[in-house]
Image 1 (cartoon, rainbow, N blue to C red):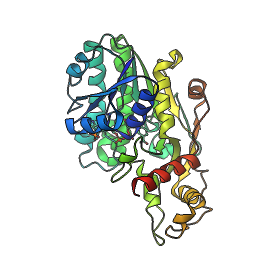
Image 2 (cartoon, rainbow, N blue to C red):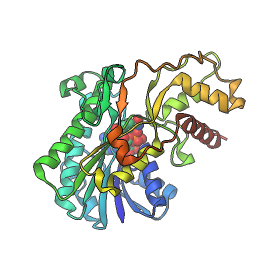
Image 3 (cartoon, rainbow, N blue to C red):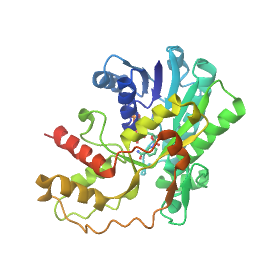
Image 4 (cartoon, rainbow, N blue to C red):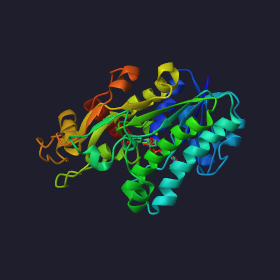
Length: 332
Ligand code: NDP
């Protein structure tokens, strides 16, 4: 079986590709340049092929790539701008995410009649607004959508990301409802994704926006302030697993699958590093180890998702340990 993964260079995508290959699937990934594709081939081996799709937000952008691979029967759409600091909110974030998602669904519909399952990587930000994520009376679940509008998304770079994911997911469900394509749709809605890169080679330099959270703590010096990052956490390998379950299990069709494990902030990450890596204690700050109160976070009711995904999750402690061990190897 061959699976197409859009945005193959991504943090979540590479973990998903590694898992797919280990399970015996073949993978075709889309990348924005041949150089990126060649690098991935080197990392993932001969069961990985790539197609160059330079621009997401173009009607028919995926037609040729799909026509070249009639063996593909499953499509995972993970490509989307992941940034909280865009310069042009509309052109760099909203349009590629929303139009890109619509067009890719249309391409699969028109150019790949053999594709029966599509999984779209959505987000917790399509479920809850920034304010709701940090509102203890709010319950995030599979049944609710972030109320954010396009206009609000245009106004601020963080809102742009939240609106891009919300409106892209809504557009995806609408496309399927209106056009009744040959495939079924599922979404994976991860909370903040932390944890190691699929390949040590990728664990250096600039990391993806959320993988940066552990790295930022790891790089702190004794007198540095503890970064304010905080939120709900899931390990990237559990997100990869959810993408596979989303197409393998029939009961996942037409469903939104939340992936959530526990809560984090930078102080808790620091506490875990200090406990598990005595050699780093000297360089790192102590902060305030008691500052790990999450009572202001929204509740996540992911019971429906757990009924499909199961309850097994990688803990924050394990995730941080694996990430730091990888950083130490990569920078050795
Ligand atoms: P990455 O930034 O690592 O991956 C993003 C991928 O999308 C890359 O392959 C990137 O390609 C591609 N991409 C970005 N912008 C464009 C564009 N304009 N046109 C074409 N391709 C583009 O992030 P993640 O792995 O974290 O994110 C993957 C998906 O998961 C996204 O849809 C994101 O919204 C979602 N998600 C992420 C969460 C997280 O906490 N990280 C939480 C919930 C959802 P290139 O390498 O060429 O830039």
